[in-house]
Image (cartoon, rainbow, N blue to C red; front, side):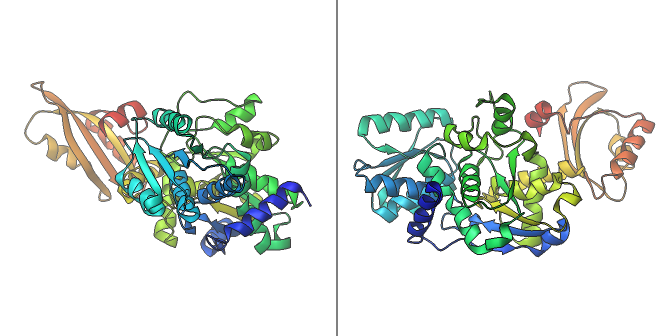
Length: 418
């Protein structure tokens, strides 16, 4: 038997001490929508609502067996990795310290403390993750605590590969010719799943979904080496990684760049709201990546095929729901923002309102500047039920002689004033 496969089998068996295999569910809605037979691997239903527990558990299990970690464990994370390590610390009854940026939402801090109980200490340090990570490294060096990496370690990859072990056990021969769609951030999950399924000679095809605002895997494949991005869009916080891991890239560098699908963040918001409203499935942005990638496949690529999409997590902060809805509407073309040069005269607002159609609604009206005697700059948000309505509306604005600027897709201005 392939040595890696054997180690993953052992890790999966040990993992049953914590929780049963997560469900692999055939999804009728997505199957009808794509023409494929779609299965969802529900890592959002693990005890910590993500797959990260697998890698942390396996790393710590092996370290403890080798006599390491006697001074405790430490990690730097503001999300799923922190919660996974905390849960594992409580399971093994070992001390752990989690470093989080001071900007971490209180909800994530409390969840980490809940999973770790009295075995975990949370330390807030720095406004940005790099500062937080350095503090964790300094703590590890000074105290002798063992650093638990989020993805860049063979034992972490081996633990994440237990996802593939469970899929293979349940699907058996049905995996032959299947398409497995994997989210990619640091690459630990994708590296583990692909290596395991190739190790058991499952004739599956792989596709990778990566945030368009953090394409470290795509750019690294194109360059033939790991590339560190100068900046990333942090919206998909569970997968917004500036540089794919060294160990994961060793496994993943053999794949074609054509197998990577870059998922636009605003389009991803539509998938999150769709799955919540239609299926009642709560997905964090990274957890929706694999499902959203379906939109980039041609119908003939999916029709009649077995597809397995891995939902990597469901730790969604509902305080972000207004932002998700907003971005979804903008992607669908149902909401736009304008800056109007508004005349300062009686009846001007009434004249403007008369240009709106029965399906058009003002969602925001705010003076940005009213110092001029004759005109003022006004931010106006408009929402409609059909994107085609905006073509009519803009024609009405032009015919009426209104001066305006559409800032919907101007990220610099929109992020500053919306």
